[in-house]
Image (cartoon, rainbow, N blue to C red; front, side):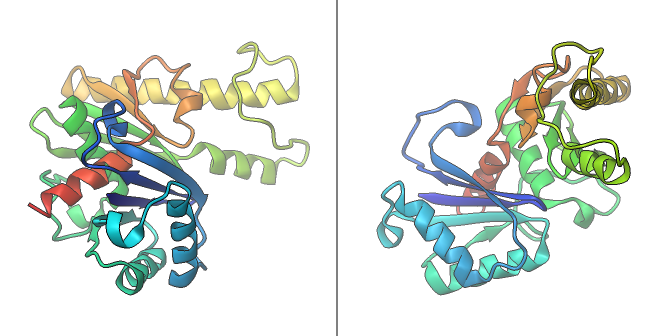
Length: 264
């Protein structure tokens, strides 16, 4: 089995893939189980191992017998170093890390390809594998990433906007009269209370931003597929008009593909 780990600035997602299983759909084919944890830069490699081992125990995985590979991506260098150390000490596998020099099968047309985050590359690889191109991946995380893939499978570039949660944190931190609210779709666009007004501005406001950005992408490259992923995709995708697919495990699928391409 393959252990895939996507380390974001806010959350870390782990997935366990069985290459012999065909259960599931899209990016979840072969996904035995998955877990979402808060990202803690202070965690040592030993602490990481305790967490990983405990999670794998919940699905009855024999680490020595069943685990045959590991694949990582991370935008947090300190955590990536600890992940490498964890694998070296506790696992008998050589991890594949998305970084310069690793075969992804996707040309990066950024002015400086090294600037592209590893998670963005994983998402682009996965989206092209599942849907071809041209495609836009919208990843709802600490930042909202828009990644554009051409019809020929090239990473063209994209856009980065502030994420939903950090935008709200800034709002609540600066506005003394406003307080945190539950992130759900309100009854109406025109809120009848402060809570509903914040919910409307957040849910419908970010949905409108997505639709507006997609319209601008289409004016540049033509009609495109639009795929949603990330922790808050389930909140915005149903009210936005642009999305053709929602793939919560897109990054994990990309990690699986990159691992396969580097172990042929």
